[in-house]
Amino acid sequence: MHVVDPDGRRLALDVLGAGDLVGGPAGWVAEASVRPMVQTWLALAGPVEVRDGLARRAHRSSALACCLAWDRVTERVAGRLDDLAERFGRPVVGGRGLSLALTQDDLADLAGSTRESVNRALAELARLGRVRATRGTYVVAAPGFALDAEHRRSDHSSPWRIASEHEVQ
Image (cartoon, rainbow, N blue to C red; front, side, top):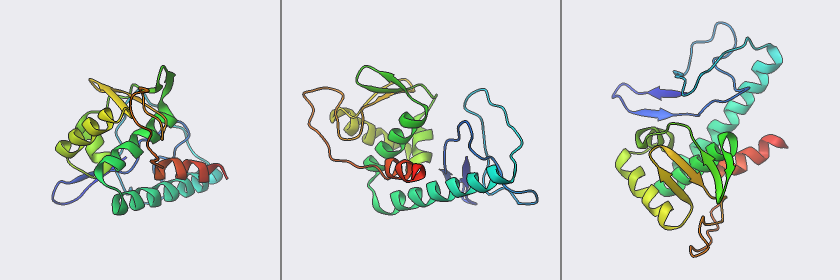
């Protein structure tokens, strides 16, 4: 789900998954555009699903705003990859495998940055052992842990992980 400003700048607000709300109550004007990344289907949402979906969207949007305001690009990229790995990844050796077809441009849109900055951030995350990338697929180590024992631990605490924890409460 993304927005584009009049100058053509893009910001991906979220990657939606099973049970996430697309749109809003009847009569609302869409706040963002949605494009599928995988085969997708839509189901009609009832009043409770709309209410809960809007609450989840507001919570995740506030986490994104905090991340954009306070975090460096490397932290933003790590946070978005942590979130995607948690929600869509599969357990693999060393972390969670994320096989969504994400380009560096997609990650830039998700992190509110440029492809060039995301490229540098991914190189730094790879150096720290937090992410291993191969042509659009990523293995993401759990926050605080490196993929390889030789890499140092990081005390990074992603706002996306915090948002997920609060959603459960």
